[in-house]
Length: 197
Image (cartoon, rainbow, N blue to C red; front, top):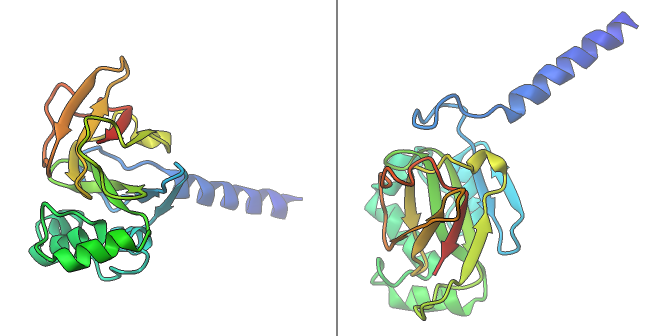
């Protein structure tokens, strides 16, 4: 019986360590996790940014930098991300962009980070196709897993989408039309939901 109690304690400790939240919202710790929300709103999380990007791009990008800040500032990586997200704002490779859109494969609409300057944990939002500029919301999510509530500090917009964030009182902030390494203090670490338009 004692043996089983010891094993149960070991398993409980392992489970707790696997779901532990990062120690600091702005630290970019080794405990960072990288989640991807699909077009239906289900989320899956990974231990590395590279794994998350491989999943989000359908294995079209499997060599993303492990460091999220380095990835955000790497022109080669951002150009490839633009191509696979159908983002005409960033990439001159129009033929690749149109091929990505025509393929019918979901693309990355936005990536949010819990640290300033694209550091820490990341949450990638997949969209069915690039956003259309028609003054309407194309996609909307409440943050799930709940870890992301009141955690967002920097954002990247992809697939021609603009990012809007909402606080707990449903006040709307934005739009962020491009990358923002540091959110306005009024919404920094206060976001509960995101819209893409």
